[in-house]
Image (cartoon, rainbow, N blue to C red; front, top):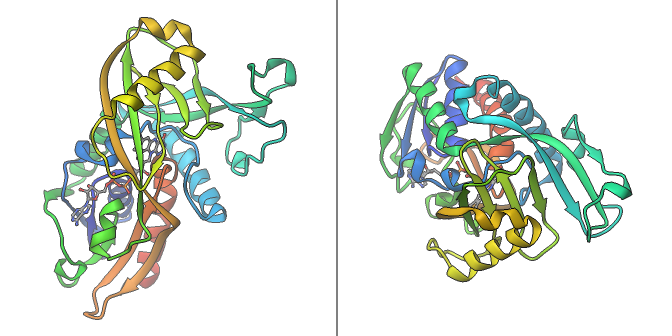
Length: 315
Ligand SMILES: Cc1cc2nc3c(=O)[nH]c(=O)nc-3n(C[C@H](O)[C@H](O)[C@H](O)COP(=O)(O)OP(=O)(O)OC[C@H]3O[C@@H](n4cnc5c(N)ncnc54)[C@H](O)[C@@H]3O)c2cc1C
């Protein structure tokens, strides 16, 4: 069994820490930010592959994560539950390359496709309420003896000798690993209360995705996908457009109150980096970053692979 230091307490760091702990490793987490101040805390957090590559690996990781999230949803305290979801398309035969990962998915017959779209799929997928899910994961890690320390690392060699480091620093890997291929894709969402939708809605046919996701206590409405924008503040123009899109699709949302606006930078990379590295100092690292718009969709599958790498290279 190894001494493991996980860098990062977003969804990737927490899922790795718990998975490794459950396999008997001695695990601690160092994180620059509190888990509820990470990009992961901003996420709409529905299971759906989006802005993540490469497809072949994403398919496997997403299928494993789907099954894990369904098991976690059995505990109501987790904040994970399944939601019926409609995704619409502007052409009649879209290539939904990840559909095989979803047991319940069906293409809607033409007479059920909402206007003005050309096709749609209906699927039931896990949706994580991050305000509950992240604290639930932190509590699970702590209950099994795990420690989370607020600490920023400037070089991978700063980590304690004799430990394996699991690098889940998301966009932070840009500076930590001098990896300029990790780039931000800005996302802004609104949280609405006072109305309910009985299903989730996803429309990725426009420049910015339009989605409405009914969480347990509120409705998350988005969004934006602005490449290379580092702006972590609310953009009022985005807020106005997001609301207008939502009202056009679901007029009943005009009665809702906007209770919060949140912005996060998705850590996008042309290919997710999940691989081991031995540093010149001899320290062992397993990198696990660059999950773009799919951190919650891939986390548990990636954590399993990190554990396999660690087990196969331990010693
Ligand atoms: C608006 C929006 C909507 C989204 N919707 C979805 C969705 O519906 N489904 C989905 O699957 N995904 C979604 N995502 C994407 C998802 O949020 C990300 O893929 C995910 O949060 C990435 O997780 P992470 O753990 O890699 O990074 P983060 O959550 O950013 O965590 C990184 C961690 O590393 C720490 N760190 C960084 N640098 C250092 C350092 N040098 N030293 C120490 N610690 C460091 C940070 O403090 C933090 O704890 C969405 C994102 C946004 C912004």
